[in-house]
Length: 298
Ligand SMILES: NC(=O)c1ccc[n+]([C@@H]2O[C@H](COP(=O)([O-])OP(=O)(O)OC[C@H]3O[C@@H](n4cnc5c(N)ncnc54)[C@H](OP(=O)(O)O)[C@@H]3O)[C@@H](O)[C@H]2O)c1
Image (cartoon, rainbow, N blue to C red):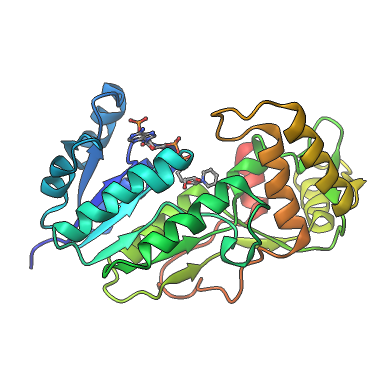
């Protein structure tokens, strides 16, 4: 039997390269759509992993239609603002439909924005806008919603303040939130890309935890006591977001400080909580716990 051909946009990115590797490990052929500006080093790594490369120009849909042809699913891991998520991803979608591809996985990979009111998260509003367009096409679309990347707990997300030995929270320290590693999100996305009948949304979480539980885990992993640090109420956070946004000029930055605060608000409010979970859909998927992620990164 021929290998399934998966067309992957954003394959040079942080998440995309893991999706490419996971697909190849699962026996798929991967065609990475790249642009003239993509780093030659990243292209070399994708080729070494076993992907084929197709250079496309999003200004010329014919290049995308040709590259998508023969694919069973188009997976997008593009990142950016409106120009990318609605604009270029829209051109990719139309090209997939035009070339007869049956399935499409948009670049969502986030908390459950389908439940969020407009205006509460600039980056996630863009995804809902894209969905309006996506749901008007005949293609079978599946969004993967994974909460926040667990990897960010040891990176830029201001949850665990390692130097201060505090876990910051807004509102309720017992509000549970969803976390999944980049690697697990990529493995699940690859399985979904190769699954011919997926529902419109698949929700996954490597672990669901609260600020209080995070403090306990960080204490156990480091052997040092981590306490909770209440930053304020959700109303205060909302005010802070408005003030910061008014003070900072609207930039092209993907993650300005107020945008990070919007994610925190969405998560601590519980509105964007993922349920029910589809974690058990693919046998053999092993979920990395927060404890493991902290142990390997610290
Ligand atoms: N849930 C979470 O906690 C979380 C955290 C981070 C990201 N994400 C999501 O994961 C997805 C991927 O993000 P990422 O961090 O992997 O992104 P990334 O590392 O910045 O990669 C972005 C990809 O998009 C491509 N791209 C950017 N601008 C482009 C343009 N103008 N034309 C064509 N291609 C363009 C890049 O190609 P080049 O290499 O050519 O620039 C790259 O392949 C996004 O949906 C993002 O929101 C989720």
